[in-house]
Image 1 (cartoon, protein in one colour):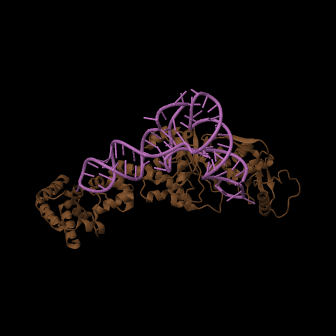
Image 2 (tube, protein in one colour; image 1 turned 90 degrees about the vertical axis):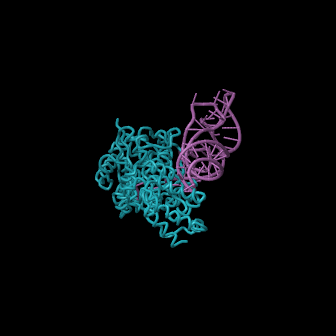
Image 3 (cartoon, helix red, strand yellow; image 1 turned 180 degrees about the vertical axis):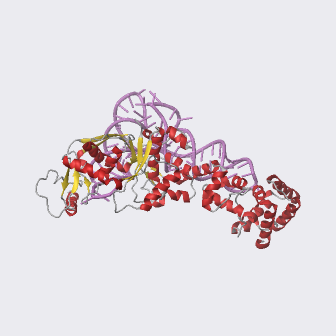
Length: 461
RNA sequence: GGCCCCAUCGUCUAACGGUUAGGAUCCAUGGUUUUCAUCCAUGUUAUAGGAGUUCGAGUCUCCUUGGGGUCACCA
């Protein structure tokens, strides 16, 4: 049987890193087995849905390149289908109308809490045959087993047993007739042919409820995998400031999708000592049964390292395209390849890379105070002046030629490399750190190099 | 609180019941580099605690502790 997995976000907020990892696991499982990965939008709660959130989720999937198979399924468009199953259960006596008001339910809950009991619906309308109270729109509840245990095998955690007493007759249709989550999920998963449901740990307790629906409707129960959560570095719930932001924020921060995916796949899953995984390798090696039981903590260091790796690996063409979003357009620049070669290894993110490149592209508007203080002192002015003269005479064009001029001045003046290197660097780029000098000069050309040095001499020394 | 799940370096993770408990990241040091970064090398750091099973336990069992999840007419 062909494997079918899915990702089913609710469009109430952005897709964050935890959701993306779960989706990745599902996607990999499908791809590994030549199966299908479906996308379903869980928008049964009309009050909380948002079109923007839905679009943002779809956009995030597009950015990371995880394509789904077939059409996106919207639960809001399937209400009639759910209605049919509700009626069926009602007819078969597997579900019933409950006329309890919200107020009564709240009272019951308070009483249970006061007695330190578990809060649950008491089944008072389960076998009700009398005259229903007036003015109350009933909800529909499903009959859950009252004794025994509901068991299932979780592909990650192993056998899970939950006492039937923990599962009450939960609501499958609201007073306004709209179906609820656990009911529609079970129906859709079954109807969409899901073989493997991979989802967050927080759904573990929904599983017995959904099994009740599966059984009531006579559907085949799929394999379940509950992936432990991602926590922050302190092991606490991930919040916005820890990185639980919109996945698209990572794009803005200058991360490559392959770095993000590689980072995420290693959170809870591994293959020996391997750290770097191409998409193809992930697909070839991934097995949801190998996902760790324990939760993992989010740590930016590793992502940064991975991102630096993928930037170094990226082709010039690719970087040129990506850099456009960060204020650097190298299109048509004949020095583009040299510029990237000089800067690639100095940026852990595209933001940092762009900053480095701008230092070369644009003459410094100002000089870093600390750097200029240190570099523009003593005989720096005289040395740079001589250097300009030498450049004018030699008019170097290649990196080697520029290097030769630097060697010459060092030799003639009997100074250390630092004596010319430091002031030169600050004059050219405004700061004491950055790409190699001869490399930068050969990119700038003799004229621009001289222009920048002279400007520094006039304005800063 | 009830129920469920989890527990190896700071972090991500390896380890047929038998390894000096491995790798990566971070950090530190050294080398390469005119600077910074890259790269290379070296180093510090872990089986939560306690019983038990076993010739032998990170690995199996139980307890404790700690953490997480969940208890809606949300998803």
